Image 1 (tube, rainbow over the protein chains, first blue to last red):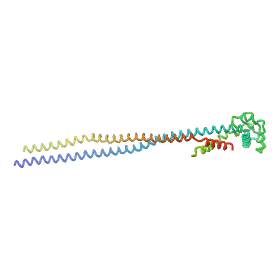
Image 2: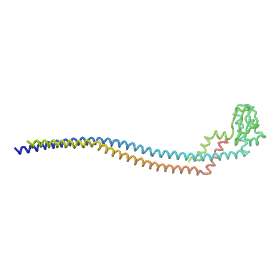
Image 3: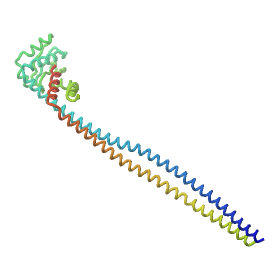
Image 4: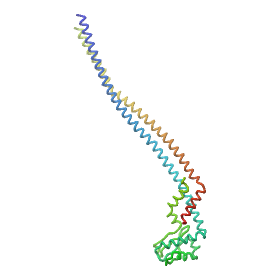
Length: 206
Length: 98
């Protein structure tokens, strides 16, 4: 009787221990599952941060490179402009020299006056020169020669009002409504793009 | 009979103790999760910081190379020969007076 009782007590305890073990296993499984799901979610977020970091890395490097390239380009263009300005100053100095050389300048001035006369729609025109040119050529037959070159019945006189120019002429109608600028400055301005392109080709082509 | 009752009581105690143990572990899950999550995200944030610092260094090195090349190019501009300058001036005069 006592042996059976002892076995019964033992079975009761054994059963409860087994049940406790099952409860523990199930509980631990639930806990591990929750932790594992949370870990997966956190890793996913970390991966997103890592992917964004790659983009941020590239952007940061590109931004720095881009800033420096812009700075470099600006410095290069500034220096290039400085060289071109220097060349244009030399061109101006050469033009001043050219205008002082009567044998070369006179034919040019004559052509300028003819061009101005031909471009002006007026029959009576005034020819204005720089103050120094006016002194040099007023008494000459330059206007008559120019008129002969135009083969038109136009008449022309010297204007008493000088123009500010290195060389060339301004031809205008008597009433000053039409003005044809054939000065070197006007030509420089007109040809500036072409001149700078040609100068750049020679200086910077390589 | 008394022994059986005691065994039943012991059995109940074992089950309750196990349930308490699991319940305590369950209560701690949010803390464990938060701590683990914080660690994973902190590592990612640290990597990000390192990467951005590396980007700054890489950018600086590349920028220095660009600056050096730019300096060389600017110097080349200032070393244009007199012959070339003369040629450019003469060509400009030729175009202007033509």
